[in-house]
Image (tube, rainbow, N blue to C red; front, side):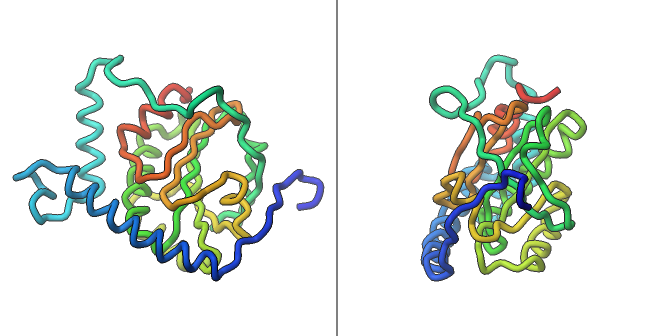
Length: 220
């Protein structure tokens, strides 16, 4: 992709990622267990031993958001003024090249995950529901597998398990995107506005209500 001003960065070694992978796995399992335990009240589906379905949790969030006054909750944002997002190009699972420079006028959610990540499936389903709700209003979603040992078939299998996950998916070859976006943990979410500025970032499984509150002001 010479001449396209594509990012370049030092590759991460598989050994370092294997260590981080194990630590990250233990962490996301614990976080995922806490989310399921806290998402449903006692006696409700998913409470007291019955696993809550991600789509059920998201739809509860939709109902809760619709019942709130319009100004009840302000969207979360990054501290300080929005900063320009670094340009990048990445090959998607469907064989196309996703270039940020071509996405002016569209907001974008970047979701840094791994195909073996337990809690990543939670947010992937939240993003699928968000994508369905705001379809055609100027938002794209790109899920990026940052594990250098992942294969296209691994990511494709993960995607197949996400109901409605028909947004963009890609492997982060050489950990280029993880490097330039300073990704330190799985379940990192970065929201880029229509002017290609980073307006939100977190490093945890993100609830549907938070995702919607962040992207709603960016939509057409």
